[in-house]
Image (cartoon, rainbow over all chains, first blue to last red; front, side, top):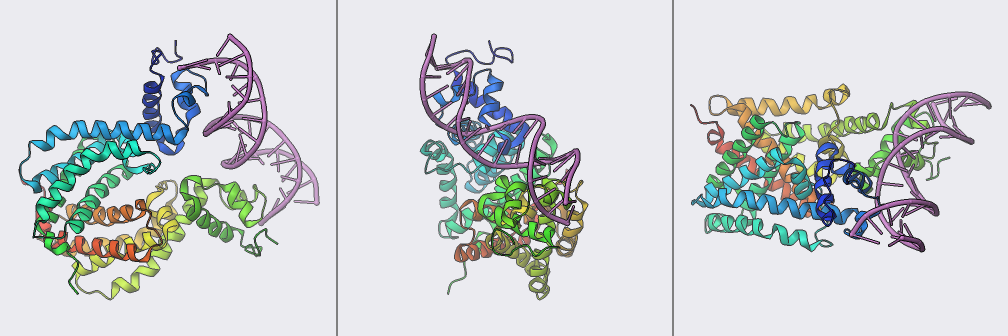
Length: 204
Length: 204
DNA sequence: GTCTATATCCCGATAGAC
DNA sequence: GTCTATCGGGATATAGAC
């Protein structure tokens, strides 16, 4: 049995390690996460993880994949209920911030750790559905009224920016602060959509 | 003499260490920065820094102070030339992104490393002038037409967001990419200012 | 103020047994 | 697939000499 009351039910060391990694990232941040400590948590030898992950980055990439999957699963039903593309984009931004506030370790793994997607194509695949929803909204909104690239950059920045401010503030896990930040991201997105022609580069 | 051609001119080990820290952060990021490596660069014993800095965080805080001073010095003349508060805010956002793109190690030390300002009041003092300029713009713009807190959050998010996207993209040091991002931040800020009443929380 | 030396601890990764 | 053992490395920080 494992050192910490049966977390590792043989045959699923891989999953147990991912779970332990998430806990560790939650407690000490991506920076301080280590294979050795994750092994200790799960109750296996420090060498055991190497049967499932090539190296530390590979485990981190697996956490990122898990994060994208969770985010997408939580997001889709919520966003699909919204018909207007501007409102859908705002809902997307709000969900992004909410994910940061309520699932910080997963958010960090997926959106701040900066996994090398060239070396870990699984991560790229995992983020594809999210990417598609986003791009569709942008295209629909830009259509004739704005440059899609400029609108996309602004909306991404506003969502990511609100999420980072929330986390830097130390308000991860604070429901009120999270909700406030999510609503701010939503309204800021709507303001950008409303003024989207202002985002275009001036013609030469 | 130092290992790397006279960087350390005795009597200024403190400054030499800060400079070395900036280089190290530029090359490997804040994460991988270490006191030991900085000492080696400067050509002193690994114990020498402890005569000037209490610990690793203290050195990082000194780098952050240096960064705020540089940023403020570069910023002020540029921003002071702009009269309209909306344009001034846009110039501020653009300068923030430009600083990220051209001085990444300093930007990281000041705005992403997350130095504990409670334990390092010097950092708080160093950022005060910047804070003042920002708050003045916000107040002037909000005056009657919007909630200042909501506008401030949105503008901060948009500036920080564009800066982070630029860095995550791997475009630090790329002049073109930096300029594009700075202009985007500027235009997005103007769009937010124009639609600032949309940012207010709905009255109950 | 700086050096030498050292204590103490941690990590990633591998080899080879079971 | 997991373990034991280990190699080789790096870090922070302190003590005591100069």
